Image 1 (tube, rainbow, N blue to C red):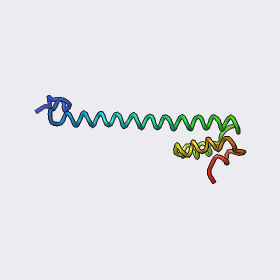
Image 2 (image 1 turned 120 degrees about the vertical axis):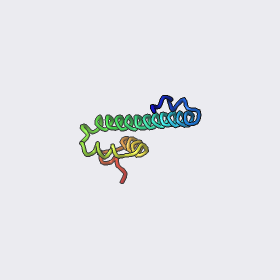
Image 3 (image 1 turned 90 degrees about the vertical axis):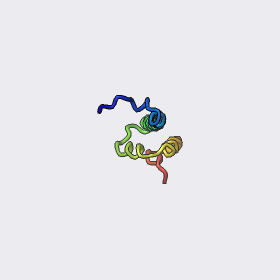
Image 4 (image 1 turned 60 degrees about the vertical axis):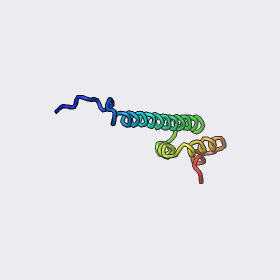
Length: 91
């Protein structure tokens, strides 16, 4: 027997299913925003490093990409007084 009713229209299952979908969309948007902000922070930091020290070596880019947002911000602040690229990493 074919299913002719949409689960979203079902009185019993529809409400929690719609609620779950809405929650999933919100979570997805939040994750996307966070990812976008981290990527933007990394891009800005790389641009600033390149402007100050020249081309950024691939290994260094990889090290920066592995940092969390707080670590990226800290590296950005250390850039203000850094004499070398290595000075951006905590010791």
